[in-house]
Length: 312
Image 1 (cartoon, rainbow, N blue to C red):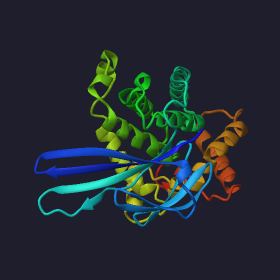
Image 2 (image 1 turned 180 degrees about the horizontal axis):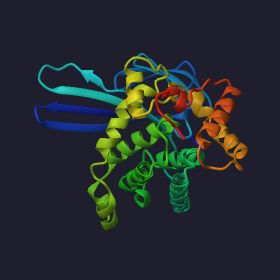
Image 3 (image 1 turned 60 degrees about the vertical axis):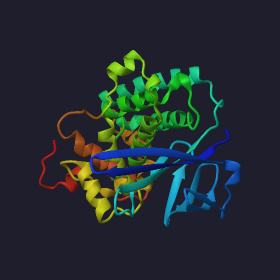
C-alpha cells in the first residue's frame, strides 16, 4: 500500500487571555522521498538520512528522528517564536498515511470495534502486554484515515476511540511510550480536524470534551522522553510520568520497546503454572530481568528501583 509522509504544524498564539491554535498539514508522496534528499516544510529543511519499507530516519530543525511507517505518530516539543506583542509557539507532528480509498472501511471499522473490546478485556485481566500488537494495528488503521476525511469514521469518532483506550489503561505509558505518544498525538490531531457535524447524540453524551487537557500533558512529556537521550529535563519528565514509584529509564528506550512483547510472552509461558499469590511479583521480575538480559538489556525491577518500598 502506497503512503504519504505527512507533517502537521500546530501553531499557537496568545494575546493576554485570548488564545488561538491552528493546525496545517503538508504531504509528500513516498515516491518523492529518497536517501540524501532535502525537502522544505513550513520554511524548515528536512533531510532524509535513510528510508525503507519499515521506517524513515530524517533530520528536521537540527534534530534526528526515526519513525516507524506502519504505526508511529511522532511529535516535537514546542518551539517559541519571538514576538514582542503576542506569545507565539509551534510544534510539528510526523506520520505516514495511506491515500484515501485504499481501505474497505466497513471491515476495518468492525475490526477496530473488536480490537477495542479485546484490549479492554486484556487490561481488566492484567495482561496489558498483550495489547502491544493490537495497539500498533489500531494506530495503523486510524492514521491511514488521514489526510482525507472519511464520513464513516470521522475525526471525532476516532478521537473517542482513542479516549476509551487511554482512559481504560489499555496501553502502558512506561512500557510503550512511543505507542502511547502515537495515540496521544493522533487524538490531538483529530480534535483539531473535527467538525461540529461529526458529533451524533451518542458522541455528544459520551465523549469527554476536555480530555485533551490530560492528553496535552502527556504530549509535552513524551516529546522529550522518546527523543532517545533520557537526561536532564527529559529524565525529570520520565520520573514525573512514572508516578510514586521509580521506573527504570531503560523502559523509555527504543531497544526496550522492540523486545518487550516477546519478553512478556516468554515470561508468561514460563510462569503459566506458578501460583499468582504472595511473592509472585518477585518471581515475575526475576524471570523478566533474565529474559531481558538474554537480549542484551540490563533492567532494574521496581524493587531494585524503590529499595525502601516493600512489595509482596
